[in-house]
Amino acid sequence: MPRVVVVGAGVIGLTSALALEEAGHDVQVIAAAKGPNTTSAAAGAIWYPFKVGPPDKVSKWAGATRRWLVDLAARHPDAGVDVLERTELSNSDAMPWWAEATPGLRRVEATPARPLPNGAKYGWLFDAPRCDPPIFLAWLERQLKKPVRIEKIAALTDLHRRENADFIINSTGLGARSLTHDTQLQAIYGQTVIVAPGAINIQHCMGDERDESRMFYSIPRRAEVVLGGCAEPCPDDRATTTTRAMTDSILSRAASMGLEPGPVLRESAGLRPYRPSVRLERDAHEPGLIHNYGHGGAGYTLCRGCAAEVVSLL
Ligand SMILES: Cc1cc2nc3c(=O)[nH]c(=O)nc-3n(C[C@H](O)[C@H](O)[C@H](O)COP(=O)(O)OP(=O)(O)OC[C@H]3O[C@@H](n4cnc5c(N)ncnc54)[C@H](O)[C@@H]3O)c2cc1C
Image (cartoon, protein in one colour):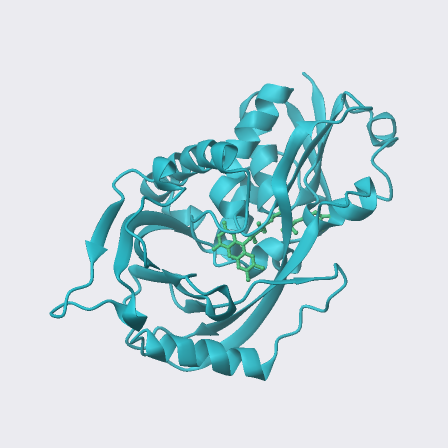
């Protein structure tokens, strides 16, 4: 049985590890941090392709992930995945680039009798699986045969010899920069405000990225609602602290969408590991090393499709 070491315990590493185990491999996950100390814990985390590329591959990976998450929602309620309805506001009636991966996508048009928020002309409605990150990450970890080993890896080059592994999967998110010197990787800061549901319908998500400087989303979890957000390119070492000004701005955007949240519970921030193209390939110099990082604002949206491709690359 081939022995595989997955480096990274965010949503990408854990999903890769699970798919590899299901395919019959002997898998060990090694990570500097897990659970709440990963970027994955800061996510919304709704199925929606945001800040990620390239479009053709993203559509394929997102479609596969969507089918897997819908199935998990039906068969494993303890995984923390639920299928919600999402409305994405738009000023264009042209099909969005992610339409191919979104069966059942339908367009609604604003009318004087039924206006859409913030003067939007159209809304795209679709069913979107949403993961509750603390529940989902813990569930993924529980499915694995071996516990995650906490260790910071200094170099990938010698790892397969040291670990006696046939394959190494690099799922280190933004951490890949120091391990691979990848100049295409770009941190994108995002902040959210987590509120009690108040009068928000927790079966429904809203998204509006028509003006990225005032982008907005509301993503209900099981007992709270995540309001966001922003997407600010920044250095890798930007602190993931939140600002009062951004919190106030997000709350005022929520009000302008007609949402009435309950009290603020906490604020959160994280750095999306963005790359113009997700890096999912065999390393050119080390055939036993496979990279799977750079999922930007869509790690949850692509995780299973990318994991399946990792399995096929082995
Ligand atoms: C505010 C915000 C909202 C978001 N909302 C959504 C959303 O709604 N939907 C969606 O699909 N995505 C969303 N995202 C994006 C999503 O969170 C990321 O795409 C995803 O978390 C990336 O997962 P990852 O496993 O690659 O990285 P991470 O979660 O960062 O995990 C990386 C792992 O690698 C480990 N690691 C790094 N370097 C080393 C090293 N040298 N040695 C050992 N281990 C190492 C880390 O400890 C960690 O375990 C959002 C992100 C943010 C910030």
